[in-house]
Image (tube, rainbow, N blue to C red; front, side, top):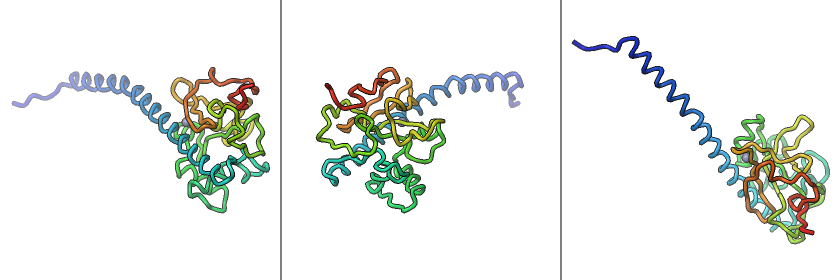
Length: 206
Ligand SMILES: [Zn+2]
């Protein structure tokens, strides 16, 4: 005669499955977060290529963070053609840029953003002047772009500076940083200088 599971046996099996799932889920979430951080580094490396192409076409100048204070003056619109995003509507162009890959998955999910959630940093926080690559003393130390977020005091996802810092959203409380020599690394909050005169914000070693 076929033996059936008793109710107790069934409950024990279900409890074991629940315990295993509870143990595995945090590990899976951590693995996903680490995967997204690596993907973000690749996105910033790709952005570095786009900035490089832009500089090649513009006498060694990068786009200004915002050339004229308008919505369309932001750097995101200047690099958009290099992502094949040429829509006339700036709202659509922001969405297209995100769909073309200029977006951090973690930042987008955390802040509910459907646009590039990276900020550009200008040497000495001069926002309306296109930085000239050859005039920067320490390009490998100067922040060019990083994870950035929506702040209650305004949009920071197009601009970062010592006063509106990179967003530490990745494992270990790190932000991914693209530098003016186009290399990328992760830094935690304590490693990001709050002094606006630091080479990280000015590009000058003094
Ligand atoms: Zn990121």
